[in-house]
Length: 490
Image (tube, rainbow, N blue to C red; front, side, top):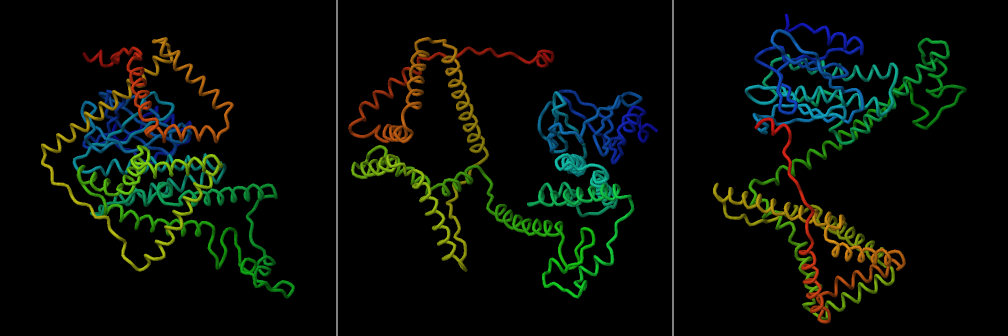
């Protein structure tokens, strides 16, 4: 039957690469697999092997030539969940996104189902498992029999997951928890576990090569080595635990192996991450206005500090501003900026240590936020519309700035370009010949003394002239062209 048979083209590709089929989907009409490439969508059959994904588009009476999406080569592949929907909308969370440097545009594989996205999650997990195991093999240069062993570990994990999927259970299956390389990618310290596995695999492979060079056969621990490990050779014994252990291959009786140590440390870190994530989930609130109120309360100390600095910069208090200016000018002149930064970091560290010391046994102080008045649906829509309008205006202003800079570089307005070139040349000469501390000192005095009583009038006049010059600079021309595919639609 067509639904269960394998095409001869795919069989030829598999046998030439020695690939093994791990999973097939899309053979049942009630559970199709849809491939989205650009604006085209095709149903078909999806096949996962231990090296690649194969998709065979369904035609009238047969399957089309299979497309191969490689997972074994380093092609900068990206595999992640994706949203799909009609006419390019992002509505249904039931698809897998695949892209690589060998493809001109990404591919989206959709797994339609009435409820949930269990099929998508399952396929995403097993695709990522094959991708991660080949990245692991490539990263650590695992070859020979060790490479096959590592690859079979990933394959057996997928088979174990398939067996659990076949058992009807009301409890949802955590796919990542049953796949080793998926789990190591997510666990804190998982890279250390993989590094330990790679060292063990490479060590075993080198031992095999040495055994083969020595004449083959299996190595076994000798009686002399066993007795010497026990400390009975020549009537000597050792109190050192490292010397008195019994080592059989990579297993040390009475001690933890490198892999066990890495896994134990990863598990301990995972517990810390879970407890920290629980606090994060507990402080999340809904609503734009409520989140803005929380952010405003958290940024209150920084806002107060900024207001104090602004008061100093605008010379509201002549005595404080003068003292601040002289103090920092002296620090810059003496080249003490590094020491000042170090002192600030030390003060932060001392504050944190003192806070930790005095807060032992006390409850953590909570951030109290006054909730804003609730907004109805119309007010929320208006708030979103205002935010979108402000974002659009911000993007337009950014484009205008970039186009004006392009116009200056292309000398569309020669007078403005000449002035800018002269300023850049002067700045280059200053940076080339003036010592660093004097440049920093001049910049500080220029910025901080702008609104001092002596310079306030000249600063306002200079600011006005700069604005007039900037408004007189024309923007570079832009031509908006429609895409060819959009023209074809119309």
